Image (cartoon, rainbow, N blue to C red; front, side, top):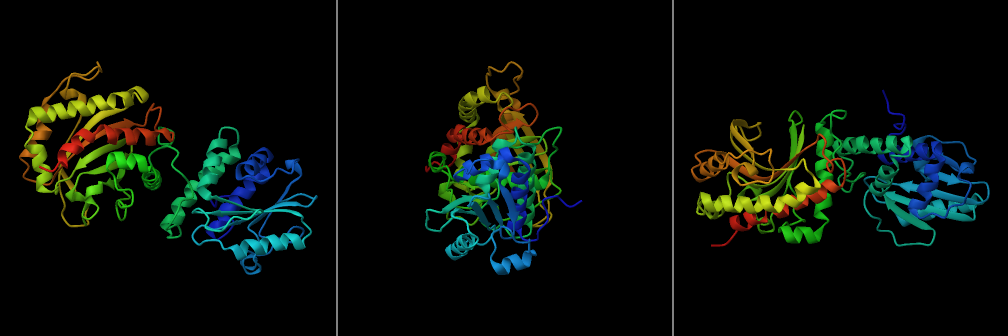
Length: 419
């Protein structure tokens, strides 16, 4: 069934239509929207008219005719000369000439209190004008998220933005910028894991983390280097991507260095420092020359660093994942020969009474690293199951992800140490 918002062919028109329809149906939301974008409230929002792809008092033309005539995407107005014109883009950028043309059209129609609002996927590059307001689709989405509890229309439109972003990205429309922002991971019993949604969330989460320049500096991350060139594997039960260590920026392959991995599976979030199979020999030697006892002390330091995060999110578990795999061909799905996953607290004295000691797991993972004869990768970090998690459904999850990576700094510093 076609979504009630899907009434246009152009991406920007789809989004503007969904927004206009919502504001038309929920006058309280309309009042909040005007305040959010910084538009002077004319009062009596119930008496405001909202039209799309047409001129006030004019019949609505076909979409292609609206494009030729340069009509605003939406027009909010009253009968006293006040109006807000909305012009939007998703892939291309708006120009000053387009916005000036809409302003003059409103003047010719007799309006004397005119504001033009531009909406784009990226921050506007147009010089400020006293009658011009600018925002992004992501900022509108974030505002909708904030209104979800009080407005079912806001909830529906936010959901539509998420679906639209996936479709636009898959169709090649959205090469730069976002329509939404990371607002947590919604997966649970009622909302099961979805590959396409997990892929969207991974992209948003890592883009948000890259913007935190202070964190990237502390974690030794280069925010300007991309992760996976293409996230593939639609039949997989997890999606992953990574951030690069600043020292690895000149390398063609990220697997020559440790890197920061973030993955979403069908039941948990996994955040780790990954020591890949093909890591440079010196980095591997830095770890293997430690000996098991010093390695165990290093892991105990990581676990201790994670304890404040466990206070914030009790479902968080310090975690190790080690895996041996092989690839029948370069692009094929790997065949997993062995996997060892365990709570790192099994190897140290822990204040968590439910975790029983079993140091053999950590020793097995380390011994295999020292004596590997196959494609072997080890990850140290933490996992957070979706069920009953406090932070996973909210933006606070990003703070935990960053905290996990910083907690693993002792391991990272030893691996990349110059000796």
